[in-house]
Image (cartoon, rainbow, N blue to C red; front, side):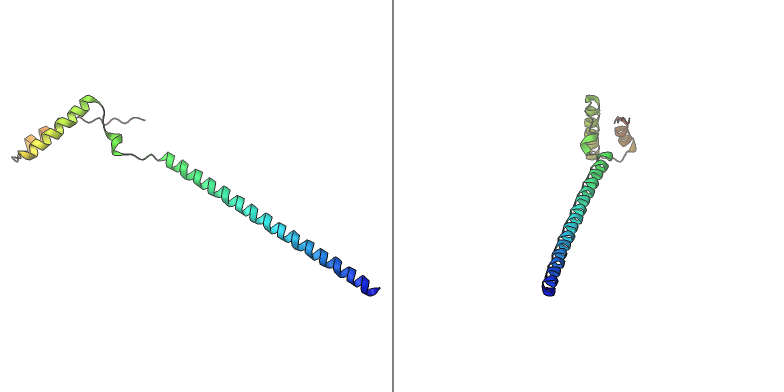
Length: 112
């Protein structure tokens, strides 16, 4: 009888150990899932911050500064023609160069 009791007692202990091992594996899996979810949420938050940061600082292209007004386009063309003719017919006089620079009209008004 003692042997049967010991055997039953050993089986109960083995069952309890198996249950404890299962519990620990479930807890370990739950921790890993929580860690994965937290890290993915952190990555999403960082990506959103990066997108917001990019939106705050606009990047300018040379096309942003091209004027579409006909009068300004004519002034730019005249200045380009005068500078090319001045470089072709360079005689060293500063008056001619200063005259070509004063004909250029630039709009420096900033708007938001």
